[in-house]
Image 1: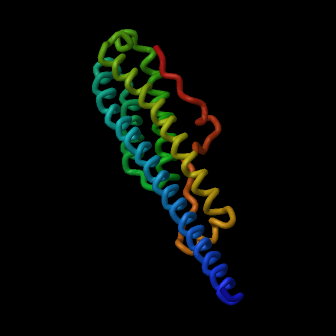
Image 2: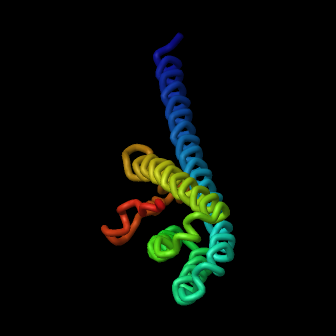
Image 3: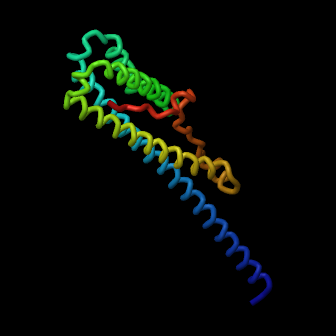
Length: 188
């Protein structure tokens, strides 16, 4: 075997290793992007569940809270805004507002002892609390997936592959106001 053959074999092996390394990085980026999409869909499912609970909650409380029309309308409007929001930042903002309105709604409901004793209301309250916990968990999973993807998009050498194939950083699902970062307490 000649020196030229050995050099050619070494070059081919290095080239093949480089191609496999490039492919591995690309596949990792695709997998992380898909994890972000999956995590977002889990948030979306829980937000829809929350949005579906709200009309039942409003209907259950209407008879008891006849003098609280403004509060009921605020909940309905916030739900509509949250349902129509697009994009991570807009959805996060609309959901924050919905959480704030629901917190105020639950505080007003405290003033109605008959409502607090209503089995339908108690069941809906429990379901809403459970859904809020699931949303928080899904948001955490989404933000973790975004963190991993964003790290790969920014770190060398995967950032080279990310630029070539147009992988972009994703937005975190964050609460804007520090006061909103406090979990609303829904208890009777």
